Image (cartoon, rainbow over all chains, first blue to last red):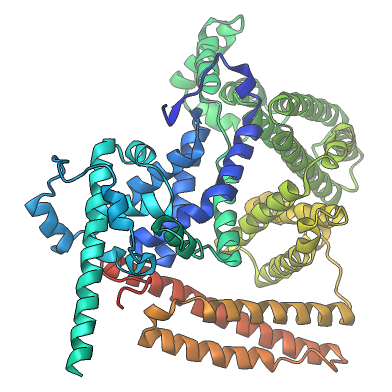
Length: 200
Length: 426
């Protein structure tokens, strides 16, 4: 299903005037602004910037709508616009960091052998949600955004794939690998704490 | 035991925009919508093309084509015609050619209403100039009155077209049109009170105003839309003030500032009524809208500023001692709340030395505001002293607010990829 399309001239029902379009847009603002803010906050870890990104998202979407184009479903469309804004900003600011190292090595997402039915459930079983949230920042951006879409925004792999413009398989692999890194890191840190306590 | 999905959603659902953040965001986004209304691109561009083609193909093509040729070959004539007044040889070029050509490009109903309003203002200015030179005869006056009516009819036609598409937008446009007519009426009344001929034009403007349906449709406008419009116009008036600071006298600036302050107080008081959809807000909002529009006209049109004083155009009553004390109290409370929000707005994980300094300054400012007296103020001079203290505190708060915003932005730029406001360590 397309997220957006050119305004149809053959649908007089939908052309009931600019006020109904404005009304729909304002309803979308009230319905999704908190969720979008939450998503942005966990992605960029800066409250002020997150609010700015939500604002830019709504302004961009309004510019799209006012030019006569139609948004069929606001939720995925808003997420997609915001995702693009965050990715653009990230690209601009990327320095020689952990992210750049990952990019140089290239994240191999072509093979799905490690995925089998129930593999994600295995990983999330007994995974501490609080610690996972606290560790989101250590994930490479591609994994971090997919985990946020999946668990914080509560979107399914199919919806995420439409927003991110990736295949459903790629999304599933990223979720799996992101969770695996989180679980491994939590385990390592718990191990370190245990060792320290033993030494004391 | 809840599963991972439920737990993570439960934990993260606590992250929400605060009420003030949401309100600020809503203001910005909805103002953006108001400033960028939906454009019917298809219709507009087609009509624009048709307008261009009409210049060359319609029955009037001979006249229009000649007018264009004339404009090209004798480039100075249209420019000279712009300054022509009724009775001048070139006046026909100004109204019959120049204005008609421009009118062809006003294709949307909104553009048409705006353009027709401008033409009415032009005619009134012409009448005023003639009257000042003693040249406003009955015949010219009658001609101008007729033209004013014709432009008003065209504007009303545009408003009706708008109404078919968007009732709210049409009502807001009709309020603006009515306000423009009211301003012109005041200008005429002030500048040409002795001239009987000018009275004829004044009557025409007032007749047109009475015939308009702004007052009839205003009752149907949702309070929230009306409040949003007042907020937009007030913001615009505030933005215009710095642009005229060099050209206006200090007395004029003081008068404008006083009215802007009245506007902001009115908006503050009426806000609760709007939120509860209480109709008692409507007359207050209408008065505020009218005041904001008059201030905009006064600041943006030098002719108006040179002709009429602000006390005549937009009179405001001096507040009584009781009202001033009441205002002082509510403004003091509002400032205390703002300081409190700014002081508690940071996230604990981002506390830096700058944040600590800011906190200290905010505590000092809060104490200062707390010391402002709102009780036992018996005379005007003691109220004035406390009002001045409050104004100074407001200025100081604004500076802190701006420096905080700038600081946050620069921190965000340098550390966005590495710093986390969400605790990142065990």
